[in-house]
Every structure is written in structure tokens, then in C-alpha cells.
Image 1 (cartoon, rainbow, N blue to C red):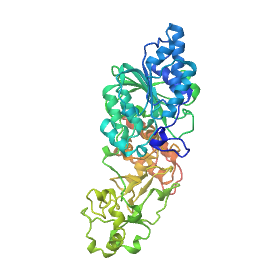
Image 2 (image 1 turned 45 degrees about the vertical axis):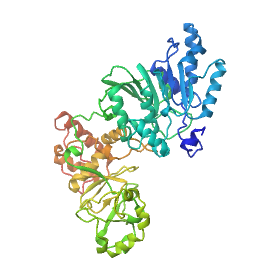
Image 3 (image 1 turned 120 degrees about the horizontal axis):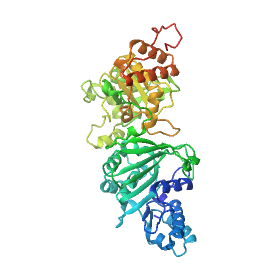
Image 4 (image 1 turned 180 degrees about the vertical axis):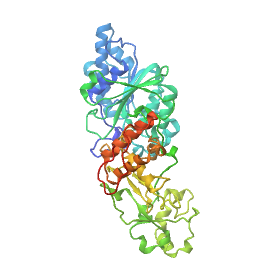
Amino acid sequence: MNSTADIYGSRANGDAHGDVFTSPEIVRFMLDLTGYTSEKDLSKSTILEPSCGIGDFLIEIQRRIIISAERYGFDAEQAFSNNVYACDIDADKMSHCIRILRERMPQFKATNFRHGDFLTSSWDISFDYIVGNPPYVSYANIPDNLKKLYKHKFRTFHYRTDLYILFYEHSLRLLSKNGKHCFICSDRWLKNESGRKLRAFISANFDVEYIIDIESLKAFKEAVLAYPSITVISNSKKSTSVKTARIERIESLYTNIKFDDKVFPDNDNWNSIFLKDNTGGLYTIEQQGFSIGIGVATGSDKVFISKTLYENIETELLIPLITAKDLTGNYFQWSGRYLLNPYNQSGNLIDLEKYPKAKSYLSAHKEALSQRHIVRNNRTWYALIDKVKPHLTERPKVLLPDISGNDFIFVDSGQYYPGHNIYYIAGGDITTMELIAAILMSSFVKNQIMSISNKMNGGLPRWQSQTIRKLRIPSLSQIRPKEKDAILYAYQQKDFQTIDILVSRIVKSQRSGAPSRKSICRQPSLFDQQSFLG
């Protein structure tokens, strides 16, 4: 196998998974950030590009060494041959890269350029600089034999880890004392569960100097759906702060960038770095006594979820199920799907002999159900992945589809059970749930979500339990009755602007510990269409 596509497969556009190349402007900016500049004597500085591809970084490194050699009087080809290291899994790209480099340096010796898997390679040298763009290969596209190998080799292989996380760990372990590491990469690892162990590893051993959001830039040579950031990490005495910035235009790379100094966490939770609003003095949803969960996963929706079950199964086993498709276009319209619930009120599987219709129906699908992964792990053949929670259907709950373009957040008054693509918040009456939904619709919360969640295609944030649990909202018990009534009225009218104003005022009040300067002047009436802003 000589190509990346042979190993990881091809994308829809025909290119290999992992092949996304960096624009020259970004390459120059990254090298500048690390301090690898031609103004310095680069004759002894070792540098590694662990996934060199066709040489985007190496060509610029070569140019800088040539300029540095003219300035400091050393042999550029010898310095490049001795001190520049590269690796790539694709032999054809490596050969192409070497040919380009030899156009300027005919005598360049590529003895430090390796064809192979960087993640399985060992190096007897540490590096002053490590730069690059690690391959974008998702967990699903990593071959099973390599997954097994990587899980044994890397401490950060966790959950559904993408390949670039392992590139971080392996390359950081090769960084010399006071060395600089700079990658351009998807920002997902900074926030999600699969990056948690990498964050913990970095927090314990390294100093993060910069995290720069370049989502708005054309950072790559092709249009890709990615949310990239640039990180600079040093192997030096840990600092308590990190510089962050968001760059909107490519021209801004060479002007004065406004950096924010953020406190750097000493653990695996880095969300405070990305929050745009000061959330001090506020509380999480769970701290206020509410529960957060996700809907039921069956392992075979085609069998356990259907519109026609009502005709074929004992009605006491059927639960109306709500899915993300039922909550689209800011409308809540139940599609008529039911869940076949094979559990009793005690949480145990039912005895099928007592339910002849269910037994007949499920037995017709027994072969397929028995092939599910959960059954191979000693579960009964008609069990679900998740047990159904008794009484959840009857509880009022906020419904949050995993990915949604809705502006409005719906509340189920207590009629449906959520499906596996819906997160929910429960623990209060219908009025309290609508109050939470309204607050979650505010710009104040949306800014938190956009900062700490991973955006999907189209820039939509994801509602996930790990994100919902981190949100900070006002204390509901401290919101005055008239303010609650006004928010609820705005929620029922889908008046997003009024919700924003009210939530902003309440947040400001609770942070300062003082009552709002402008109070809500009166009780809302079902017949009064005004906004109650005081």
C-alpha cells in the first residue's frame, strides 16, 4: 500500500481521507508563531513535519533556511539535510515532495525523510520545532487492526478518537526542552469527549501558549467542512494563562492581532477558555436540581419503532415516541411513531409468554435482533440498548434535538418518550420547563453553546449532554415572579428579542447580586400583546 487512500479510503470528492493541504499564508503564520524565522540562525535547529504530504511546510522551511544561511554564513543544503525531518504514509507524495525540494537544493540528502506510519515509528532524537497539519481521519475510517495497535500504544486513544489526536500525543513526546509545537487542526478535540485524555495529558505536561480560531479563513487549498484552529504548545515551564484570538480575514494574519489572555485550566476541562461571556455567579442546570438525559437507543429502530405497532402489539407495551424529525421548522408535530417497550415498571424484561402479540412480532425478527452487538454481550435477544425509564413519558421535559436548525426549543407537557437523537431536561412542572427552554433560546446561552460545543456542517451547534451540563444559567429561584411571567409570555409568543432582553437583564442582576434597575411593570395578560419590559 503506497497511498493514503489504500489505507483510509477515499472521500466523496475522490481524494483520500486525511489529505487536506494547508494554504501558504497559514504555513507562514504558523512558523512565525513558533519563532522558526529566517532572522534566526537556523543552522542547528531541528524541526519535524510528521505528515508532510506534498511538502507545504517543508518548502517554506527550506526557504527560511536559505535566507538564514545567507545571513549567518552556513551551508543551507547541509543544514537542511541534517536538521529537517519528515514523515508520510504515502510514498508517492513523499517522492513528489523530495523532487520539489531538490529543485532548490540538488545535493539535498533525504536521509531524514521517512515513508511510513508516523504513529508506529520511533525516533532517537528530540525536536526543537514540530509543525504541521495532521491527517483528518475519523475513528470510523481507521482500520480495525490499527485501532487495536493504537489503543495499546497511545494513552490518549479514548472513546471515538480521530487520528489527529494520536498525532498530537506522539509528536509532543518528541518535543525537546523549551521546544515549540504548532498544529493546524479541527477544534473538536479542544471541547469534546474524545479529546479529554489529550487535554489532560497536555495540561499535566506542557504549556499551551496560543489557541487561535481560524474557522472563517480559507485555511486549506480546497473547500472543506472543518472548523480549524491553530495551537502552539511548548515544552517549558507551565504558564497559568493562554492567549486566544479569532481571526476573521486572511489579511489579519500580518497585522496586529488582538489576543485575549485566558486562565489556563490544570485539568481536562478547557471550556472556560472559549466562553465569550463571563458566567461567574451563575449555575449549571444540574446544580439547580434538574436531570439531563438522552432518549432511548434500541439497537434496531426498524423493529422497535413504527407507526404500525399499534395495530399489532398489546397497547400496554406501546409508548408514543418523539424524534428529531417531529421537531423541525420550529414546529412540533408528532409523526405517530410508537416505541415497543419490552420492560416492565421494575425495569426488567417482560415475559413474552404473557404478551402473545408481542411474542409473535418479535419472534419474526429474532434472527436479526440476535445479531446485535448488545446481544452478543450476553443480553437477552429482545432487549434494548437502553432500558426505558418508568414515568419519563408523563414528566414535562425540555426537548433538545442533537442537531437542529430550530430557533424555538420545545417542551413536552408529558405525552411522549424521547428517541435517541433527542436530549432532554426534566425535574420540574410545565411552567418551569418552559422557563428553562426560554433561557436556553437566549443569545446569552447560544453564545456559550457556540463557544463550547462542536459545530456541525452548516455551523449548527450540537446539543449534547456533555455540553448541556456545562452551561451556566441564572438561578431560577432568584428570578422574580413578574420576570418569570414576562419570559414565559415571550416564550409562548416566540418573541426571541424580548427573551434576549429579559435574560440579559436577569444575568446582569444575578452577577451583581442586585435587583434589576428596570423592573417588569405588570403581570402579563393573555389578551395583552405588548412586551413586558418595564
